Image 1 (cartoon, helix red, strand yellow):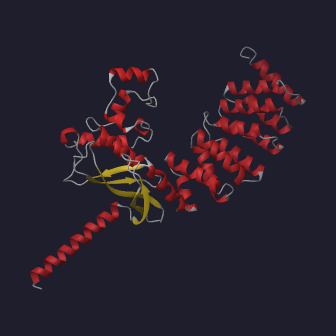
Image 2 (image 1 turned 180 degrees about the vertical axis):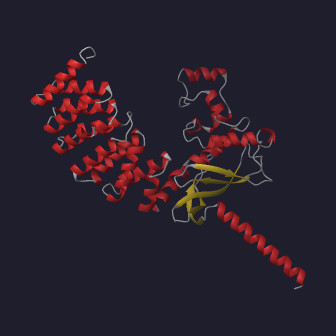
Image 3 (image 1 turned 90 degrees about the vertical axis):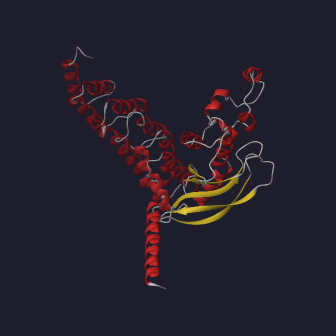
Length: 384
């Protein structure tokens, strides 16, 4: 090999290594393997399913990172268009992420007009809409909207559009590309979703599930919560992570978290104590869920009742009101509860102090507490 050829070869190798390193960095160090799934063509579901090879992406920690499928499909109704080779990507939970297509074979609309950037952007938005009306509208309805007479029949309930209006369907597709929009939506959100989720479930290690439970993505939290409830409802390894969900998530996930903790923390006193601690970090919207949980228990041990009273001075008015209402409904009272509620009479927020006085007025108090209550009532007699 001549010196010039050796230099060119070295430069070529250097550039290839640099490019490979760039791609590896952008991909977060992901590796992949593959598995087969059987899928029906959404346009022709009556035909036998075909086997497809799906690439499974794994991140540097060995956790599921996503999936990729390449497939060929027609993008027009008469099959006169050439078929296009597409590649779809999903995240590890089976949610569509993006679509790739050959540069020399773009998607097209009516009259074979190529998609523009705005069309691709709208298509991407459509494919990410899991609850699209395309889920229940047939392809025939989408590509041939009803006439005025048919619309009248639909309004009278004489046909099945599953509640979708012609305008709703129009908004759910790319202009002049209804067939493509419907077809690709069903590839992205149809049969394959449950198969991808099954793969992730099979690979869901405790460490991976703990990562999901700590995620800011509601869908990840939902997947992990439902998985551990179904497959390991008493596994104590997830307790700390589920308490994190309890303190940071929404109503549905808080209820699921409470259900899990019932089985995973069998010592009721320990469970109640941790719930009281978490209760102090919940906002006014979600705090009632924990107190409803306490109210539903057959009986609360005295230390739990006293524990609730012990955090009263750390809470805003609404949470204080809820705890005192629980005490009233259950008839809870003790020396410890009395002491903590009497202390609220000196609270800097008058509404909290007044609420405490209302609770105390219904109880039989010791002499000192009674004097404190009477002094408060005399001091604020014009505001009670």
